[in-house]
Image (cartoon, rainbow, N blue to C red):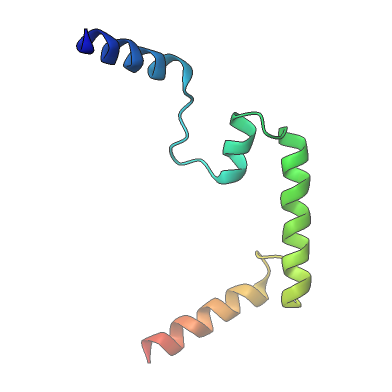
Length: 79
């Protein structure tokens, strides 16, 4: 009886529980329907802008300034 119950629960989980491995928390919210993808994308963009304004960053991550800072940190770490 116990084995039948365990097997039925395993099948239930395999069929009805979505995989969340290697998903961000934002993506998990979308998978479980807590928020739609468009709203989540807007929230993430807003949070990024707030973090940039707090840090005083006025350039994008791909700009040369960021790359130069990374190079400087690597050089100081090597020394």
